[in-house]
Length: 180
Ligand code: IMP
Ligand code: MG
Image (tube, rainbow, N blue to C red; front, side, top):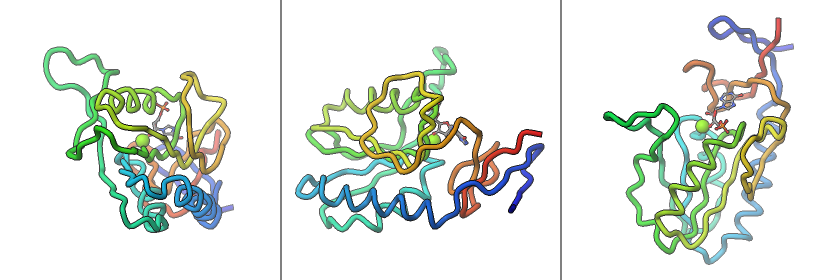
């Protein structure tokens, strides 16, 4: 079994790239049907989603589609709460658009819930959410997910864009933590 050590933890091969790619191909096929004539704006949530977004977007065959990249940043200034994070980097006009948020993983659901709230304030026509990975047992928010690549157990994972304290994003396969 392939293993990698990152910081203090050991990870073992969990989802090979071929399986990740196949799930993204299926998702793209569905989107190509669902979003035809909708002039969609895909929004990739950095950093974790960059590989997923690249793999997916090159399989979107609708020429009238755009992609933009955002980050969640903690509020600067005196009202920092630690939890409330602001979407930065969005320059496109959202009003009246069909928006598709691209997330790497939905865990508790707090992040995606927060992103949806912020986007809805910008009056889009519709917002859908696509996540490569979902940990159903970790969900504490009720979130509506329109596209889910793969459901996984509640274990910490790295690879394919996802990190453990900065490292591991470059792994082409997904690895899960080995509890020692
Ligand atoms: P949520 O707000 O709890 O749903 O967490 C979502 C964010 O936490 C994701 O966008 C990831 O950046 C990060 N995250 C959640 N689970 C993992 C994991 O297993 N490995 C790496 N990052 C994770
Ligand atoms: Mg993320």
